[in-house]
Image 1 (cartoon, helix red, strand yellow):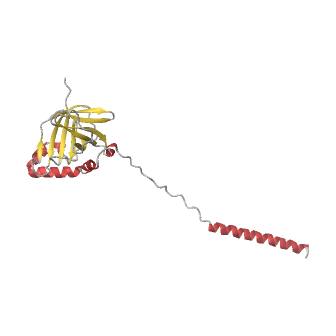
Image 2: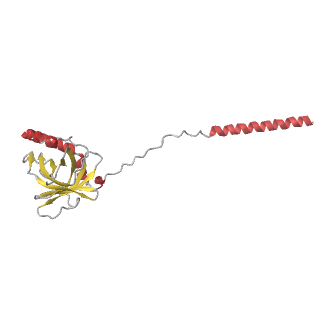
Image 3: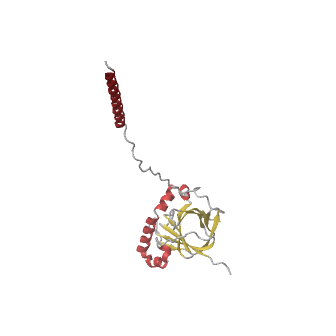
Length: 230
């Protein structure tokens, strides 16, 4: 075999080796799937529990969530039983959607008045407005508290921020008779109270208790600041 022949065979072998290597590389590229384009990352929304939601009982949470039902049923019953004019005379106080921004009251003394709407057992009056009494708003740490100062039944409780900026959530209890201090919320379910606190006009607030445990379908407590003594 001549030198020229051996040189041609070497070149052919090198060419074949290169061709095989290219084929293997191409085959490897075909087997490897192309990388997936980056897509949007899943978003996990963490909803922070409001303070009052971690304190209120399931029953009281349901009361607050059904406050519009309480308004509707209580007003319908009272109006159908002849109290439409006295309800209208109360103006914004008895309008379900009258809440205004900045509901937090200024600490101090207030003249308070209770109005009961609807009945739980179809007995008694469907509208009952009581004589005014005094209650007090004070600061307790980061919270505001409301305390009725006189009478045989004295609501007392704290106000908590809510997702709805036009209202505060009230969680409290009912002190009776000669008791020196109200029970802590959650200590006695029959004494617990839950509702919403709203501002309905300049210097006019209301505490609304839906589905109270006794007598009515809805209790509305009006609060008007007592003018400072001159």
